[in-house]
Image 1 (cartoon, one colour):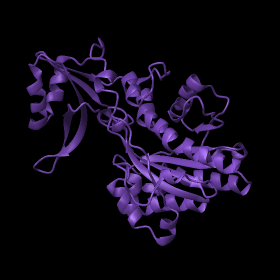
Image 2 (cartoon, helix red, strand yellow; image 1 turned 120 degrees about the vertical axis):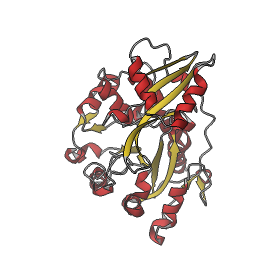
Image 3 (cartoon, helix red, strand yellow; image 1 turned 90 degrees about the horizontal axis):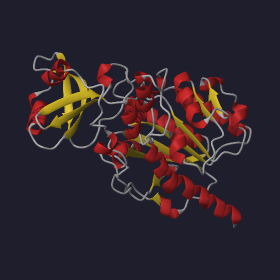
Length: 366
């Protein structure tokens, strides 16, 4: 999805993932001439010994996310960040390091381990010779999906930065409260090489949920008893949202997640929660049935429900219908849940990456 977001003017010289199914999908869309299917720990650093403008990493987020166990950088999955840094460091000793590094993860990265994990990330990147800044960007500004993510953007110390790209203080909607609090706790050394990126705010989201969902989809709809069960595990407040729309002439699209909620006795019970605000919940990997979103179409005296399709999930990530996706439902849903919202990558390309590279080119020409 990062490749899709960067667009045709960017050339990818190396892509890497350990998941064979993700690699299979990548090959179907982009070929495999530059794809390395392997653990990053086994990646030959010689492949980094070439002039590269941008490194992008989206490391596993489970140990930072609310759905994980909160192990942070000590976790087996999210700890792959450390291995990535070691590879960059090794390439640097041989005279190769990119002008820009971007690192994407869930918002929990900022607060994990009382902020110490984020400090480690920033310190590691600064130690490689970069000025570091970050933005918390929600996909809802570009797509009808609530998906806040942290995007750490780093620029090599010798690269000129146009003053228009910088702010002395946090001023953007993408400088979230938790990001501000975390940076506020940095020591002087970390703070001295921290930058606040100043980006023009995006235009209003051009896509509606109705653009993403096939309400005339004629397969996969639940039988009545399964739909009724879904309604039965809603709270009174959530069920009221459905009932007030049931008999109108318009059709309304609701998105449903199942969650564990404590009742008055402190017991955890499964609840179905619905939203009709035109925004889907954050797509997750299908670790269990509750991780998959349900589409609810209400109106004209009816309530219909079915699982969100893989193609719809891909649309919610910003991928075109021409993009080849896995035929297996769980594999496709995992691809979406682990992905990066395509329009955010394009936004960072236009507002940061390419202006930074242009500034460096102008500096070199002078």
